[in-house]
Length: 144
Image 1 (tube, rainbow, N blue to C red):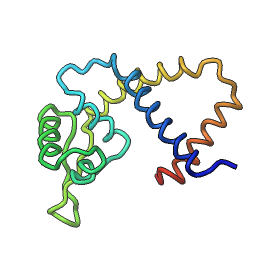
Image 2 (spheres, rainbow, N blue to C red; image 1 turned 90 degrees about the vertical axis):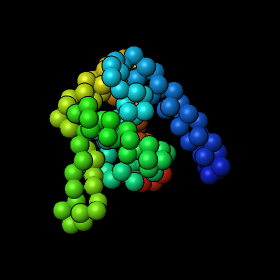
Image 3 (cartoon, helix red, strand yellow; image 1 turned 180 degrees about the vertical axis):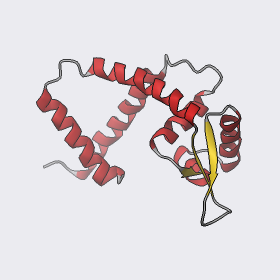
């Protein structure tokens, strides 16, 4: 039986490794006219959208003024768009535009190729274990 403290240490190590893996998978992406922070926002929107500015600010650890400024820049570049909440006019959501979706599809294609290289030769049973472990983490710790 593993202690919760030991499990936490494993999780902390996993998070650090995931950050390193993310860096390695994105370092060669062409950024063209966007900053690394703007890319992070687009990447986040590609998996969690639509989302409010305050949710984005909180999740990414960016101040509300900076979040608003970066979303405006991304909107001006045609990569995301704001949509009004039908039930509350004060509330706005942000989502990727069609151009933003296309750009992120290219990024994920690049990352998928790198991932497939990493798991080449991994047996089906291990891939199944990996998928199940991710499912357990999402359901318990990440609460997705």
